[in-house]
Amino acid sequence: MRVVIAEDCALLRAAETRLLEHAGFDVVGQAGDGEELLRKVRAHRPDVAIVDIRMPPHQLDEGLRAARAIRAELPSIGVLLLSQHVEERFATELLEHGAAGVGYLLKDRVTDIAGFLDAVRQVAEGGSVLDPEVVDHMLGRHRRRLPGLTDRDLEVLAQIAAGASNHAIAARLFLSPRTIERHVTAILDTLGISASPHTHRRVLAVLAYLHAS
Picture 1: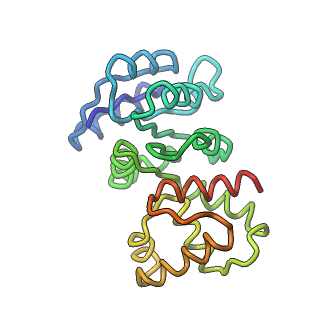
Picture 2: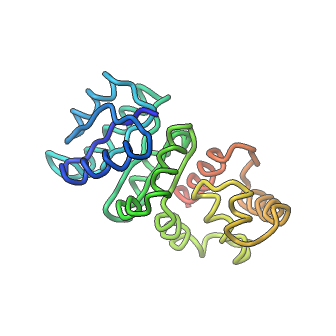
């Protein structure tokens, strides 16, 4: 699996590279700013680009803008955004044109090596990953606008928005898959969202609802 890393901190970029290569990934390019990222992605056509949101020259949203350019020009390439803080706007902006092959994690998650590597794989394979803290922030802010959902429904909704399958949710909440299916059906019916067997479409539907509320 081929990866391009965009991170302006040389030490962190080197650490991510060593971590990924040790796990069997092929890091085919490294970049320190958005323009260099686009050049490396166009040249190497990786399976996934891991992108720091804030990069030179202004340390604002240069990484996000480069990620959106990649999504528009080369939609088959997965993009995993890394952020120092919870910034809901960045997640919704990247996902507004589709959630397949998109991820958004806080940088602290890199220390959870297994979870980080799994996120890279999921995004490279067309899945979607959202940091649990980002999901909690989004749901917490809109919780009062979700009438008709039970506390358990909200727990399941948070897991859906994080990209988990029904079986994964069942394991995490120590419930049966059939019970989770009932909760998912109730959630989608209550929110007026058409059910879909594709996890990334469920993520997009939830985020679209939250963004519009």
